[in-house]
Structure formats: structure tokens, C-alpha cells
Image 1 (cartoon, helix red, strand yellow):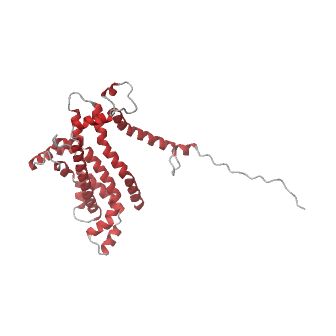
Image 2 (spheres, rainbow, N blue to C red):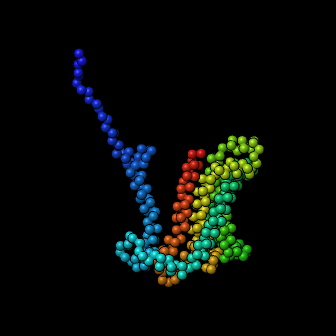
Image 3 (cartoon, helix red, strand yellow):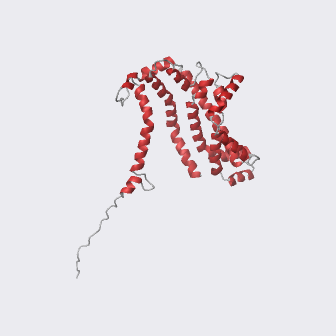
Length: 298
């Protein structure tokens, strides 16, 4: 005889409610609303000057006098760009800027990596003193050396030439210090000693051991060096003439008249910013992947 008892009740687990604090601040694995809100605010604050330049550069100069500035671009952008091309030697200046920035970037990354590796992993007399001297040069304002450097360029007969802009910045103290600080921790001394015990020369050790580990830092330094050389204004303005300008010095000619049409000036500024945006779009993903790869290896 079977006795049927009362039906058993199955308890269904309700999903746990996420605490309000975790939704706002995150849980350590996923960011919360506050993180996304701050990132969005910083992004909008950083992108607004460029967007405002696009708006004014695509309209007439009358848009600056309105009580409420427009929020959308107008239809005069290419007309203003045509005025820029007619006023300044834009393509010559663009080619000079690309050439100068490219040479400086390759030179700074190459020499800074070599010097940083030497200061980080090679033992020689006076290493610490030389490193202190390199770092001490970073405390000297650049403006103090402009007059002696200009006199030197004039004695060499380089004024008005691109070499006067390139040669003084073939290597930077910041680049050497940055690569030294990166390589001193990312490469174990035992790895270099084992390579030397296997018969590798100094150059071979640098090429096969140090260089692969230094690629993330080289990418960051290369990007910063290109941006610094691209946006440099004071030294090219002093050492170059109007017939052979860089892009930044050529844009200053748009404001040399008594009446300044800011719509044309900002249209030229937007055109000068587009190469940097293209560089970030192309190299941004590789740069982030290189940083993550270096962080995992470290």
C-alpha cells in the first residue's frame, strides 16, 4: 500500500539583486555607472574644442558673433579650405611637417632605445653620473637655449633649411630616461647573462633580447615624439623662413593680416589635425596591444 504524501514544493532561487554601490562604482572586474560617466565627460570635454573648430571652420566668421553658437557644421568647409590653399603653401608645409616629424621620430626612438639599454643593463664607469646629467638637462627650459642654438645654426649656414629643425632634436633626454626606466625592469639580468654565455655578442643580445621587449615602449615614445615634432611651433618659426615653412608656421600666416577670418584659420587647423587623427586610428590598436603585451610580459 503506497501512501502519497503532500506534494513537495520546489524552491526557485531568485537572482540576487546587484547592490546599488556595485552598480555605481563597479566590482573590480566591470566598471560601474560612475566610471562610464566620468569617461564620457572627459571624452566630451576633450573632443569639444575640435568639434567647435569644425563648426566654425565650416561656416562664416559671423557664427562667432552669435549669442548661441551653432551646434552643427555648416556647408562652407571646403570653400574655407580652398581659401587656406590659396593663402599659404599648404602642401609644401604639409610635406615638410611629415618629413621632419618622421625623421625625428625614427631618430629619437632609435637613439633613445640604444642609450636606454646601455644605461639600464650595461656596466661602465660613470654610468650613474651620466644618467644624472641627462635627467638634469630636462630641468633646463627650452627657451634658454634658443638664442645660442640659433647663433650656431646661423654660423653653420642652416637657417631656412629643414636640417636646422631636425638636427637639434635627433635625441631627447626624456626619450633616454623613458626607455631606461622601462628596460631596467622588463629585462631580467639573468636573461642577458645567459645570452652572453651562449656566445651572443653585445649587438646580438640587444637585437634578439632587448629589442623585442622594448617594442611597447618604443611605440609609445614614437607616438609622443611624432606629436611633439608635428605641433612644434616656436623653433621652426625662428629658424625657417616663409618660403619653406612647416604646417604650424604656415597656419600662423593666416592671422598676419589686420582682419582675421577665424573660420579660415580654424578650417586650416582642422586640416592640420587630420593627419594626427589618422595616425591614432591606424596605430591606436597596435599601440594598446603592445602596451598590454608588455604588461603581461612584465
